Length: 50
Image (cartoon, rainbow, N blue to C red; front, side, top):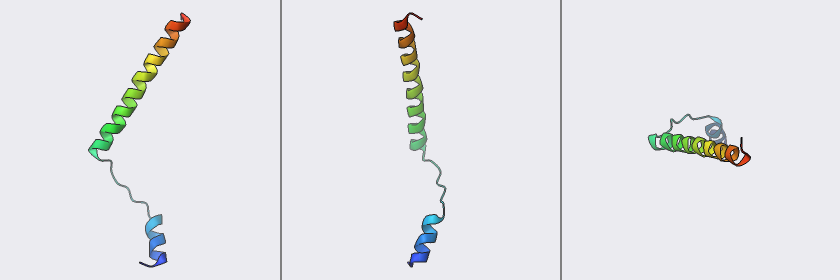
C-alpha cells in the first residue's frame, strides 16, 4: 500500500454501528450515573436540612 493510499484510507471516516453489548454498556453507565447523582443530591439535601 502506498503512502497516498494509506493517507486516504485514514482520512475516510467509517461509520460502524454500535454492537448490542456496547449499547447495553452505554445504557447501564448512563443509568447508574443518573441513579448515583440522584442519591448524591438526596443525601446532600438531607444533610443540609433542606
